[in-house]
Length: 435
Image (tube, rainbow, N blue to C red; front, side, top):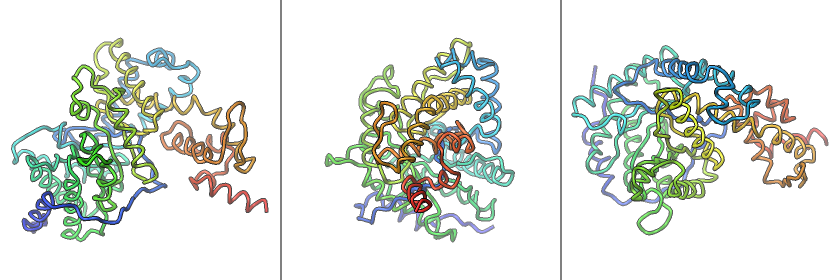
């Protein structure tokens, strides 16, 4: 078989982009309003990846749930949940862990893989690609999947791009040119806009040499350095990083521990609710609002292992972190261990189920009055509220907290109205039908 990797000349050109000044390009945002944002990304070392990883993680997660919270009451006590809410969500968590335990998985060639000899990483890149190809053929991959390469700084840029090239080359060779439907590359530890420019150039080159449609490859940014929040000139860095991606960037993930370390926070106080993290995520939210770029929070690094008491304490901490993310508008986060999946889904489902009745009343009342400012109980709603209320139901459906049938019954909307995903469209349809 002919060598179809990116030629050395093209690779050199990409590497040279790291030393050039970024040219201005039109800002493009690839956000797809119809796509389902995953509630989490599970990270696992590339050396451990197998095509059936999602099934294995689900089996391990169910075992942890059955061992440490065999019923809704025990789970309620562990996570400090209302008993009635726990009764509603417990069978949904079991169903989720059985049916779709992992929504997004990242094969990690960075921190979860470590520094290894080049020949060893070459081999794991190709083996992991073969496993992904097998999973694609067998239908065992999670709905979203991808790889995290090493950072494109001076020390590891060639290694990162080589892994990118070897993995994708082997994957396409084994799948006759097919990629998983939602495939992403994660770019970590960004310290300059040139690194994002180089990643976009690598995607351009690979698509050209493999005759893929332009724009096929998408990637996401890891926001885990101070330079990816505030640029050297004191301005917000993220808008320029998104522009440098030339329409390929679909998400920005916050890296809790690298970021707090960069801020000088000691290890004992590095956690997801540290004020430094909230500041960084506020900047992410403000600068990326309305762009279609998904936001993801980081990971809880206390693993739920050991005695039931230890597992419950870890679950409780994890659930508190997940809830904090949701309250602050981050609907995705990282999970690092299969026993975190029960607390992830329980916390997410509880968040939506707890507010469901109130949201239902407000949305019905608001739609009935054609988005005129109105009172629902003691809550005042104006036109800006409509899409937010609709998004609540859409996200609750997407993660499995409620079914589409339940959303229709609770929201008072028709199926086609829900699927439009647009409050303005719903109002137009109703006004047209009533005219």
